[in-house]
Structure formats: C-alpha cells, structure tokens
Length: 264
Image 1 (cartoon, rainbow, N blue to C red):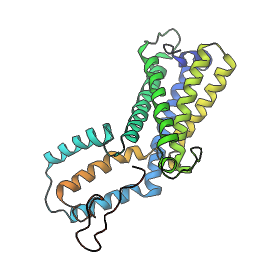
Image 2: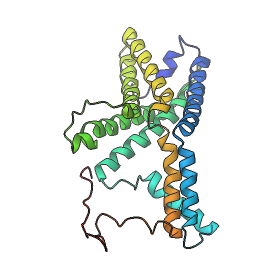
Image 3: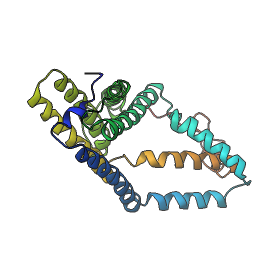
C-alpha cells in the first residue's frame, strides 16, 4: 500500500489525460474561487485601505532593505512556523495539517503528471510521501476538530457540531481520509470498494477546491500579506495607537486588566 502509486491503477481504466485535466481544473477552481472571494468579501479593498491608514499614521519611514528583511522574517516565523499561534497544541496541529496538505498536493501532482502512464515505474519515495502527507493532515485535522477547537475545548459544544465556516477543514480531512481508505482497499484487492472510495475521494476533492467562496481556503493566501503588513506597521510605528496588550493594565481610565481569551 505505502509503496504503490494508486493513480497508476486508476490509469488502467481512466486515461491519464483525464486525471491530468482534473488537476488543471482544480487549479483553475482555486484561482477563480480566490478571485471571487476577494471581490465578494472585499478583502483586497480592506487590506489596501488598512495599508493606506498605516502609512498616514507612520512615525518613521521603512526602507527597501528593511522591508526585505521584514518579508523574510514574516515568511519564516508567521508562515513557515505558524508563529502567530500562542497555543502550542494548536500551532503543532496547524503545522501538521499545513505541511501534510502541501506534501499531499505536490506528490499527487507528480504521480499523476509524471508516473500515471502505462509502463512508467513510480519511484517508491513519492507514494511514501503521498501517504505520509495524507496521514499528517488526518492527525492534525482530527486533533484540531475534536480537541482544540475553541467552541469545543472552551465552550463545551459537541465536536460533531458543524458550521458553514468549517467547510475547508471538513472537506480537507474527508479528502485525505478517503484517499487513505481508497489506497488501502486497492492494495488488498477489493475492487468494487476501491472504486467506491475513489469516487468519494474525487467528490470530496471537488468540494474542497470548488467550495473556496464558502470556506476559509483563500485565507491561506491572505495570511502572508497580513503578517508582512503587521510587521511593517510595527516597524514604522503606525501601530502605536492600538490598545495595550492584555497582559498590561491600562494607564488611564479604570485601569482594568483584560484577560487572555480562554481558548488560549
């Protein structure tokens, strides 16, 4: 199971060009869905207006070299290491899911575009990484869904409670879970079940990539820009007018110390 390319078996019935076309369609859905999300939710407009306000209230100028340094710092800490999470469990679950998803996407594309044609042998490393990526998503996703979510861990709601905003997480975990079950059923020679789970895997994949306007999928594209802008605002002094952090009492007024959110 772990060393077999499951898409090579599919290629015995479905032509490789069909699978390659499916990948291209999914990419186009991501692009179209993200553009629609930006226009409909006015995310880009809000982002640029926020940048304009920050520049207006800046107390110093940030040079090009400093901005490049800030960009690398934001990429390393906020994006690659998910440093914005205060809770270590939430951070680790997010990293598992994120890197597992990236690994799953890359190896899926490689195995379909390079090794799905008949007679082409797939290097063992790609199926191994494909299964590892799917497993990482499942571990991180289920851990978050059942134990870390704020409404479950802090508010006592049922872990099976579903909201429309959960579409991305649910479809992502469903996609990788069905991929693993499909691969297993294929390896043990259960043909009918294998094709059934493959069909379910395809449906969940379509929901994942076509549901961008109704999910938080596009959020991953906005995070790097938001992290960069926040660091620039810190550097140019435009965030100095924000309220004090929750661990510092107010200097004026009632002087009431705010508490850290309970889900942390």
